[in-house]
Length: 432
Ligand code: DWN
Ligand code: ZN
Image 1: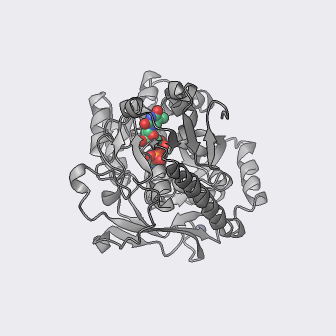
Image 2: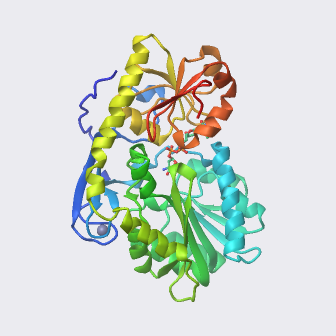
Image 3: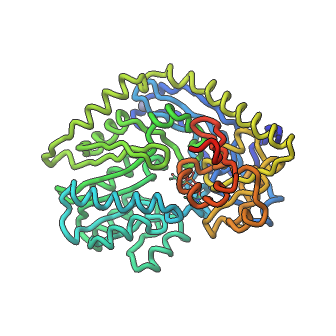
């Protein structure tokens, strides 16, 4: 088992990091640190062979809780230009997420009574997984995606795509070219935003009077309940509850008209907003979730201060299981070169002495190496050739899909290790 080598903060340009001195939502300086991962690599920065010998940037990864509004947030912001260089996360790889996108379109078409051929802007449109579903449903679509490798994919599909970070500049340009917009949607983007006021102000500026903002974010209640600590990485600046979201949305001219809890990505919430200036029937779901958060103690620091001990217990369990398997000369591989998988292995000090390789179906990740651990990322054919004794599921939010994909391995006695919410070994004699 790799000893948690003490990494030094490599030569990183100090201007590429900014300390979080006050709360991103309520601006209070009432912040308490409740978990410190130490120095962690950039979770989505997989390395090429030639980069393995170079000094890798590592940054402090610490979680702060705001005692005023309840927002959890990182203690520093790494510049987006550094974070999203050579970004290789492709949403469409997952059939589960593809199906989720179809559900988004059908639910919003019905729920928001969207007009046919309405104008939809998706912020962080990635590889067009959601954009294409709106287009197939007859909407006019515009993507906004800062990663050029991804923006070029949606442009190649014929979708207007602005290769920029969202903000006032691109909002003005969209409005100039296309006029007011009916729907702005973003899945898994709000947690990545540093200046929420600028972001939401720009959204408000391009929405028509009856327009809607809909976004999905990982939900902090699931994060705490299911110990999803590995979803903490430098891209995720905020870890949301509805209560702090309500504050920042209302401060920027929005009102929340509905909220839905979702299973996707380990548990998320879908927040549906209208402009404060328009009349809206507000669903009872909003007050119900706000009450739930208060009743569960999620707005008090105590629950967070207890969190560390639970993470240490899981880390020790996982290390113990893996080292006992290695002592029995078992071969262990992993599935899903995910950002969360990067944090799990790097934080738990599990390296290539334990994990032979990580299978990933994203072509852009294959042939690379996981940052920090330098474990090779390969395609699934390697598993057929070398049939590992155990398969650690790093993308545990897609366990069912990954187990279906490897059904033969499962049926012929393969063993899966699922690390979150608790370390579990699954095989045909002890099924999911
Ligand atoms: O917020 C974010 C979430 C939504 O996605 C992004 N900032 C980054 C990313 O986080 P992640 O990498 O932890 O997400 P996933 O979707 O859990 O990563 C799954 C990984 O597993 C991907 O690399 C793709 C891979 N995969 C695969 O190889 N075969 C996934 C499935 C379902 C498969 O069948
Ligand atoms: Zn706050």
